Image 1 (cartoon, protein in one colour):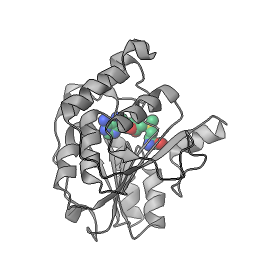
Image 2: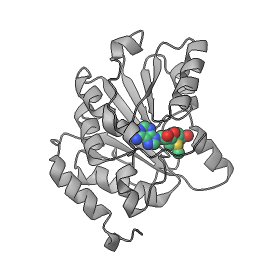
Image 3: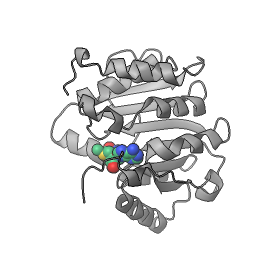
Image 4: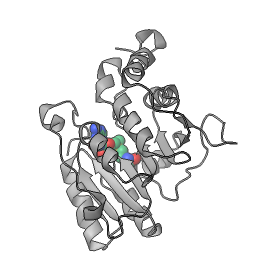
Length: 234
Ligand SMILES: C[S@@+](CC[C@H](N)C(=O)[O-])C[C@H]1O[C@@H](n2cnc3c(N)ncnc32)[C@H](O)[C@@H]1O
């Protein structure tokens, strides 16, 4: 199976209407964890079993991975877990906007695809529009967790998050990177990177009280973040 798909290709630009929480989970009013780029789903399959008092949703752009993850979920009879096929940048915004207020407690983006070149900026999973949609759905104190093993991938993401003014690092957590994962389960990529003895860069943010930024200003800032003068190659 191909490792990467081009999220900008016409097929992946078609919006998909994603099922509502009531159709996805046995108890739809539980706190929700959204994992963006869930891949084969092993992380959420394990986490959902460990945290039955939460609902977990994995979204993933590669359909075969979603089908395989859903099959495992069904076999394990996990009713607090679901996997949905979509391009997070096309279909998540309206889904998040329709969520009952306060339901999203945690969002994670873990080891996103390494589109770090400037000309690939639009292919990256965290775009200004998606960040604003997440910030709108997360109430103050709720969490956004990001980790990667590729510095040029995570650095622009963090700059974007901080430029939004909507997120802060929890008090007492101001060292540049978290040494350990705050979640009790590692993703597949995380296990592989650890086995190789390579560094992992992690940040946990909490939603603050600040209002949402204006989309066009955040998009302008995003352009600046990836200005070639900031050290990115074309
Ligand atoms: C490098 S993998 C990491 C998978 C998993 N999070 C882990 O840490 O093992 C990144 C995943 O994000 C998915 N992905 C990339 N862009 C996406 C998008 N726009 N919407 C949804 N999923 C996306 C990829 O297909 C891939 O499965």
